[in-house]
Length: 331
Image (tube, rainbow, N blue to C red; front, side, top):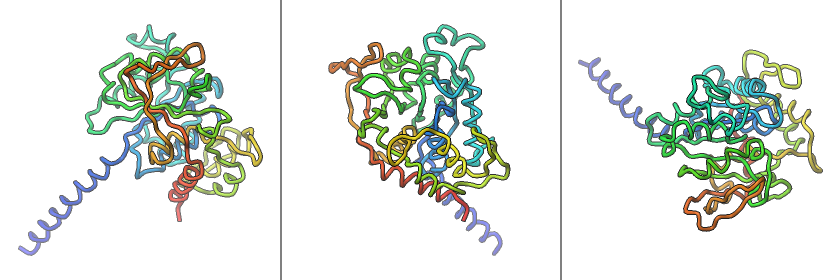
């Protein structure tokens, strides 16, 4: 009888704990990252920031695409795999290659058995169709091509997703991620899908350009930081690494720097930051504009709105990033 009572108490205890764990998971953001990981240095740090912010995100997978720099999707994937390995999430994190080409070039083929970007497009659709009380946040931190193709192939996923795109100098023209595929911008903006734009705005502190990772801070704060993995991972610029922190130092040592003191903007990681804590930026709802050549035309009467992110707290974002890396470092 005594053993029976103990067993009953244990069952009741475990039953009480299960809903609590489920409730905790339901507070996390379902996240799917779409990245041109080999472009420069910010994608790698954004991926690590999201993966290691375990209390904030359920990262369901990662897809890659080709932009102007960093090679084709094979090279983009190779860099993404390096980072995911160094964060201790490989091979369990699903990863798929996406589009080399443009939305306009691929769109006529999306119902064929094989086409450029199919693996990523199908994965995005599969995750978006999963039953959940939480929308899937699609975080494109490169061009919008994979996202646009998924929405075109299966529009039924539109109510299930929230797109948070790191891209554009809005309201000014141009920007790297945007010009990597101009053919998909107006299509995505025309859809009744939740859409948020995390501005870049080169040389303007109101955009994510103003969120700066100073080279000396990386050199001082990142060595040896992050999870320690068993196998040495060969880096993009040579050398072998067992922590993301050491790889971060290598990336910053080899990348061209800007300004005095030298820095690189933390563009992509800024999008991760405002998802974690909306207080890290300022959000305003505006009518969706239209794209004309490489510039924007405002449409003040457009009933479709988007959320525009600007005015980022650089110091707070950088501190949170370093805190996340520190917390992931074995004591």
